[in-house]
Length: 146
Image (cartoon, rainbow, N blue to C red; front, side, top):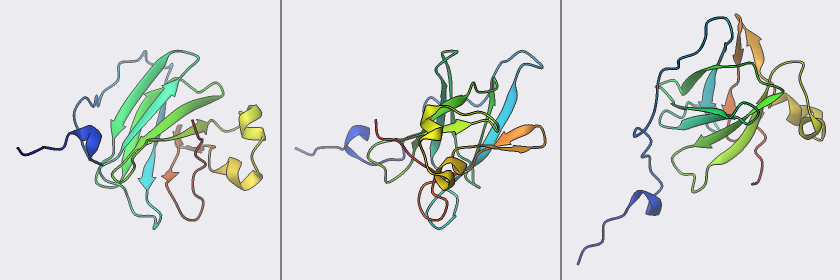
């Protein structure tokens, strides 16, 4: 008898199933959130998945990364943050972080050291928010245990 591994027994990637690459939102009420998913050497993670959750509005989105590690969402402006989950090859468990709009804060963000806070605040860029996620290395994004 030969046993075949299932996705729950292997490290993946198995991310293409169930990805939605378009959003339907009301014009003028949304904001573009985009960035790159990067490894410890600053190289793009080309087969990862970034998922965002807006707990206050009960909305979420999921995007696979492209050849440059890029992802993008059309979101309502965060109040004050969005929860972010990262799935990637080699991770046995997803990583959890947050993204804050510039000028917003809460008790969680304030509890971090200044250099850690900087890794969670998106940058304004051409009318959008840019949030690069660094899995390791210099300026590693802060991840939370859940």
